[in-house]
Image 1: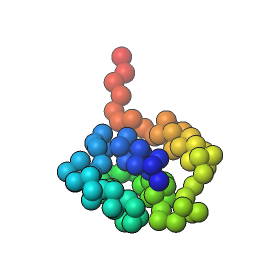
Image 2: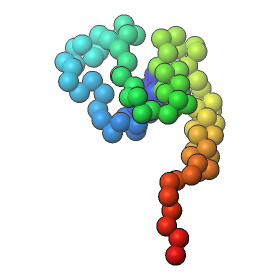
Image 3: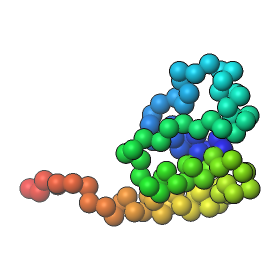
Length: 89
């Protein structure tokens, strides 16, 4: 669960639940109902990984071996995407 939150923090650069009272945060996490909002600009694969990491049923959450493999694939895909207009001299 926590790694999904870390992925969200990397994506947004924000603190999750920053405007909530700590009691509400703890209650939401204990009840397995509190999840941060995923911004619309989020990559589809990144979003899927985050949401799977914080799945209500811990059994269906990906292992760190799976997470690492998926992050490697995402990283490789980013490196092959065009980076916009490049100036040549």
